[in-house]
Image (cartoon, rainbow, N blue to C red):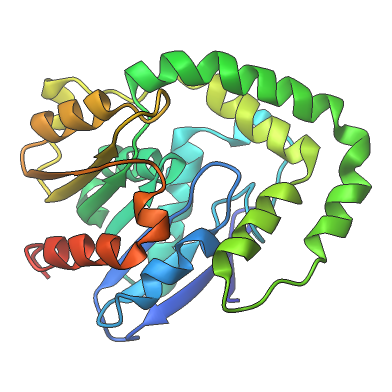
Length: 264
C-alpha cells in the first residue's frame, strides 16, 4: 500500500482503476478504513480511484492528541494526497465522516475539488443525535485503554482478500481505544459544518448527494436540504443504510452517471 508524508503523519492509500484516469478520491466512515470502499472502487475501472486512509484510521498514522482531529486537519489529508499524486483537481467523495471531510475540503479548497460525492452526510439534525452518542462511545474507548493488546491481536486476524468489507470490519474492531477516543473527542469539539445557503452557494462544482431513510444520525432531511442548497446537486435516496453496502453495483452506477457530467 503506497504511503507518503504530511508533516509528521504517514498517510496510506490504495490506487485502483486506470493510472491515467481522472482522479477520484474516496473517503471512508468514522473509525473504518478505506477498505470499506474497495468493492465500489473496482466497479469504476475507467477512473483513477484513490482510497485514502485518513489519519487516525486504517494504516495511516494515529495521533492520540484530540486536537489533531478537526475538519481542517482531515481536509489537509485530502489536499496532501492530491499534491503527492500531482493532481491539480479531483472528484472527492465519501460516506458519513468521509462525506463531511469532502464538504470541509470543498469549503476550504474549492479550487481542488472538481465534484463532490456526499453519501450520508452528518449535518445539524444528525449532529444533535451523534454528539451525546459519540460522547458516550469516546468515554467507553477511554475506559478501554487497557484493552489495547487485544486490539493488536485482532489486527492480525487473517481475512480473505475477496472480502474487503471483512477486512474493514476487522479494522474497526482492532482500533486502538486511545486513538479512537481521541478521534471522537476531537470531532465532538468541532462545530457542525456550515450548511447555510449563503456559504454553500460558493460550491458551484457538481455534487451527488446520497441519503437514506430511517437513520437518526444520517438524517434524510439533512441530505435533502444539502442537495437543495448546493447550486448543482443531484439527490439519490436509498431505502436504508445498508442498501449500497449490499448492492455496491447500484452505487457505482449512480457514481458513473454523476461522473459523466463532471467536467474533466
